[in-house]
Amino acid sequence: MSVELEDTFVCTECGSRTLNRDSERGEIVCAECGVVLSEMGLFHDDGDREPSQVGRLTTEISAANRDHQGRPLRPSGQVHAARLRKWQRRMRTYRSAHRNSQNALIGIDRICENMDLPLPVRASAHRIYLEALKGGHTLGRPLDVLSAAIVYSACRLDNIPRSLTEVARSTGLDRRLIGRAQVRLARDLALRLPLPRPDHFVERFCSHLKLSEATTKKAIEIVRTAEVAGIPSGRDPSGLAAAAIYMATILTGQLRTQGEVEASTGITQVTIRKRCKDLSIICGSA
Image (tube, rainbow, N blue to C red; front, side, top):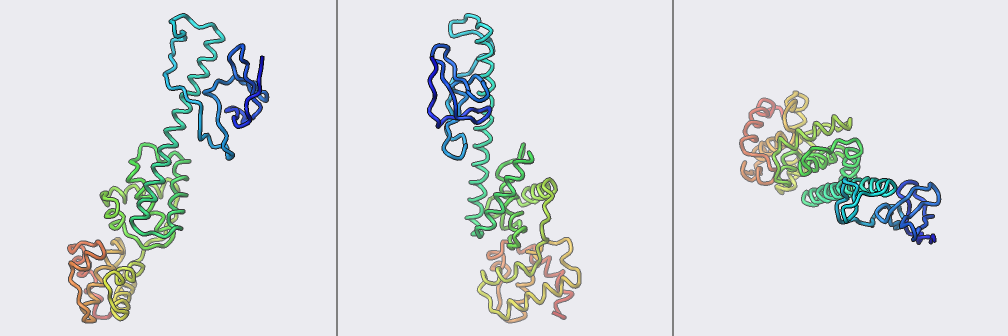
């Protein structure tokens, strides 16, 4: 005797909703492709075909091909057990991948919230992650470091000035680890990321320091003169921006200490002093 199942279940092989349960043989058969299914091999369809609820087999299916009393299975039973083992492996893989994806996207969202990034950056970060996932570039990589590298890449892609130092401070991760992960990610996905420029950071840093428009303009003038002189080459643009701001506060009389600049920009005083030496050769003309 066969009865038709409710149409909220779909075949895992062909996606058909026309399934029959043979109560005498204890099997579920797809009327479209003929595959013999079990309750394990059914997807509950919630309207968008996402397997949000799957019949779950909580015990391990033994490879010994014996029943619960230890008796050898018949050939048909062995085939059925093999199918069950196959779907058990598939569903474990699916659940693991789905869980990792959810954790990665949640981690990306958390970083974006902590850094007060606009929604387009979050959307770009999601796209980058899904591309990396599809290409198999997330395997074997620490999820937290990968998420931070993706957010930094999304900022550069959308021309939102955020430095590696800021991402590291927000996540508590080593800046160098994030940088290496970002370089590898950009290579794997062939991402064409615009190079950040020092003047992209100046206005935001000056706003944090509550500096006047005159001081902000002077800092922008310094970094743009430095760019013409080739000074930013190979240096962190946010570090040059912080040094230019510190020098501009001196030139305009709106003094800020190196400690204050460090607190607002995340650039260490050591780096600020080093970059000030680089900029001092052009400061007079600025």
